[in-house]
Amino acid sequence: MKLVDRISAILNQKGGEVWFVTPEASVYEAIEMMADKQVGALLVISDGQVVGIISERDYARKVILKGKASKQTHVREIMSSPVIFARPEHTVDDCMKIMTNNRIRHLPVVEGEKVVGVVSIGDLVKWIISVQDETIHQLENYISGKYPG
Image (cartoon, rainbow, N blue to C red; front, side):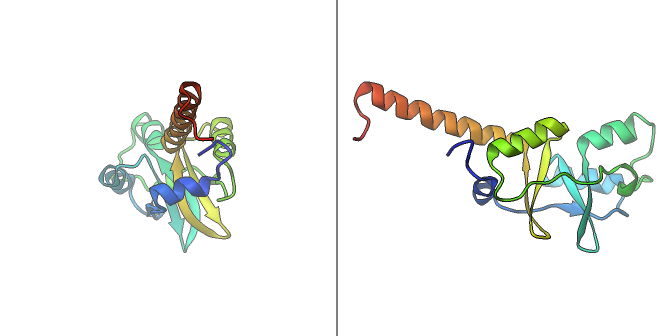
């Protein structure tokens, strides 16, 4: 596991389940689904195409702070669009840069025209910590003479 590992490795480990709503859904329905699925964002899909993404941040900033009612507000009114995405061949480091530069926390992974998964900043941090733990373990073994070789 390295920062040069492809993002597809994370999707293989975590699974490629993609949760989504339609643009016509109410924001309340979207937030309810996020809570149920324990995710911080949902893709917005219309006619099989990704048209946006809605996150807890969108809800806080575009509904709550504006005094709107979540049951009367449609997802299309607050979703972020166009969607920034990665390809399966992007590396963990590439995705960290994309997310940092665009100040986003969720990154859909698209292969061809199909969404094959979504990675969060938490997924990337977890992967990086695993890489660091593995490196530390190898160095400890090397220093103590337990390193195979």
